[in-house]
Length: 85
Length: 386
Image (cartoon, rainbow over all chains, first blue to last red; front, side):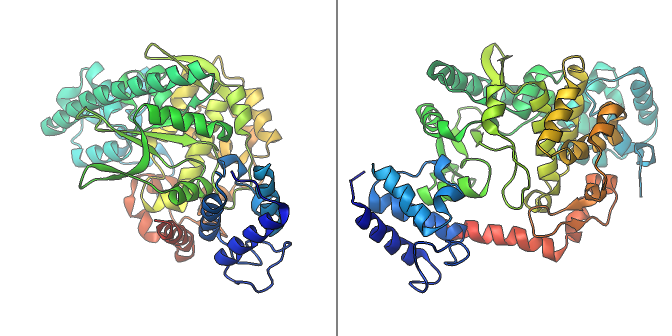
């Protein structure tokens, strides 16, 4: 995976979350809950993950598919940041 | 409404009697008595096929010297099917041995589940337990190495086109959706050069439970840590220990018996799943540590599930599961024994007794609309990622 600084990671993740959100940019912040606030259901979550993989060049392992990594926008940012190390 | 086996038609009693692994003298007497009457063999044939117990019936009647009592064309169908499954299962055993040879050499632990182990080691003859795939329990942390192993052996994660007879590889998105919405990975397929086993299928299960409104948690890593070495047709494999094997069978039966996806496809209540439990208990009665099984169920707050399975096994086959175990697992409220649709918001209640559900396919026509909504939503989502 390419290395990114934290701001760049945040920016890229927010862009991809926005793209896959039902709500678009409305109310989107790092604390937003993917499902409840942004309407990202299981189908949209799969789209988001595939987008993250292709845009950021890494693979999301099956073990990573849990609420700890995909509950809120900041969870996603932290997960991607960990992968970038 | 038949509430006991004795209230069933003679044909259905025969189907149940001949699905047993071991026949006692009293069972043999009952079989002989039933066969002395005129019987509706189309009913017996259909029930035997749909419940996957036809080969076991042929096995018993052949050994008892009673095949002359079977309608001639039905007997031919029984013989042919038994021979085909003997070949087919043997082919599958070959695949299982190849998979474990590589996994063992890589030091990766996976465990064979259900029919693959049972047909080789518990059922009286190889063809008496049929199965359609290889079922492995794995830890998701080993996903990569196990997938690579299967790919090395020529397997592809895909869907089979029955018309073109080709395997269509699935996309990353489909693999991901499958993994997230079920307890398994997208199935691995391989075309085989055998008319009785033209397609080998491998299911990699990482969870013995189900997704969606499942209140239970069973630690897969723990099950695999406790897995034991066993022999399968001369190959070294791993399977769950006695108590975990039984727990897994019980969970599997419950999951499919009450889940809309299985019910609407008539894959829910199949006699062979109850036989699996009964035959396993009968074979390993001295090895199963019931206290351990009860403790595991209570510690994991899931006693209702083995109770459900064991309750119906005892209803069908008598006191297979010891009464003390049933008492220890018994929940206060037993309404759930007649409920279905646990994957939805709220379960629905069956309008029929258990035996009618077991033998009458028309039960699916009575499924509640609310319950079907859950299934339809899932199918809709699945289609979206195609």
